[in-house]
Image (cartoon, rainbow, N blue to C red):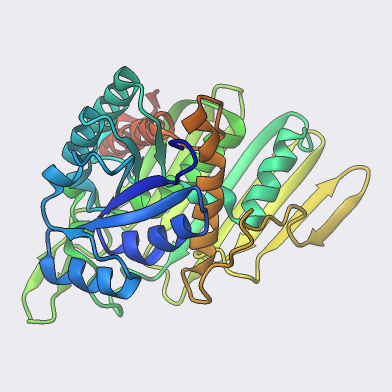
Length: 365
């Protein structure tokens, strides 16, 4: 923070940037969203009007160089992240980058190197770490509840790309533009697992594109090359095994499950894909047996603010809690949040998974 004033935030991208990021920043009074940017003048104008933000722009290049912005948040399609992030860092701005951070590890590595060389603060929106159930499990693992960790099984599924559903944003169906659901959903499980258990050593994977063409509303066909389903097997440096399965073609599906097993206990989470309120956390140990409990660590925003009562509410709260935990970094103190280091790690795993699926077998990391 600069003196007593909030950190002034400019957001590029008014999809997720306006629906989730802006209300999350507003729950943390040490930040102030003062400006929005989008290449589409109609969309940015409408978003600004809805959010009560008069300062809107369509020129991201001059936007990132403004002296009256401290933090640039990049919530655009993935293939735009590299150029925008590097430009913001070169202008001396702190950066928040939506995941997936980049199209591949070459891009994320460049962003990380630039941020470290410039000495700016950086964070990545792996906010699902702060979902109530995941936050509780995170704390339990760190307290040693599992003992020696043995195995993680994680699976996430939805029907977003099932043939019965309409077409999403077209970039999401193209690998070269950062699409696919290993990037879109599986990356959260990859980040969470590494946050809990450290570095991966090797990966073996299969990625599938089950529906290679999708009909557009005008009757034309959209060619799809990005993955709708993936299964990853990871060997971790600590000796444990991790299995992560992700699919976007589960008809009627909306599920997220995470199971961790160790020498002293087990922890399990079952919920929907948006961290909804019917989440169940199961804890098992030799001393206490097995119990189904609500998250033992319920955390509200320090400001007392509540997220909007809508479907994105849980994501907004999770991101707000992440932003709270980012604040010490601006005073030169340690901050326990995902950074470009974590974003680069996930990109390296995904690159290795794609190489494995193409025939490389086990790929060392």
